[in-house]
Image (cartoon, rainbow, N blue to C red; front, side, top):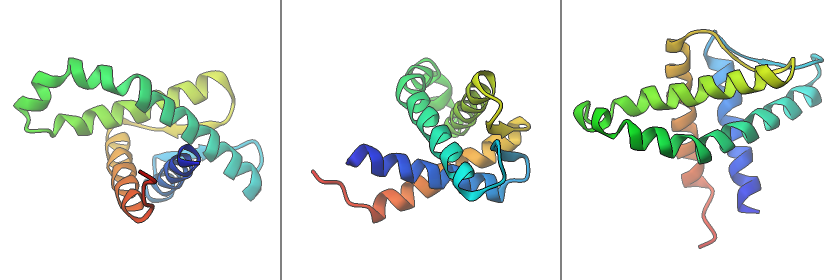
Length: 127
């Protein structure tokens, strides 16, 4: 159940980033709400997998830069994970996430991180 809640939180965060940043779009096959919800959930699943599998390795390899920049390089890592998610969803289908530019990815990564943080506080863990 916790995985489903985290997936929905990621989907809301990605949807808000696409709504607030002009150069981030959700491409769906139809313009219906149900179609967009399914695409956002699929993008959130890919984003969750990218963050679980690739991000720890990238953070480990970029640790000297993270320390040197006092953690600001993590914004670049978040942007790269968002761009990787957009590339993966675009490579395997005609719909998904579209990020046009690095700075849009940085702003989208900041929004996604903040929304995940706020919603993570509001939704309690069952520990």
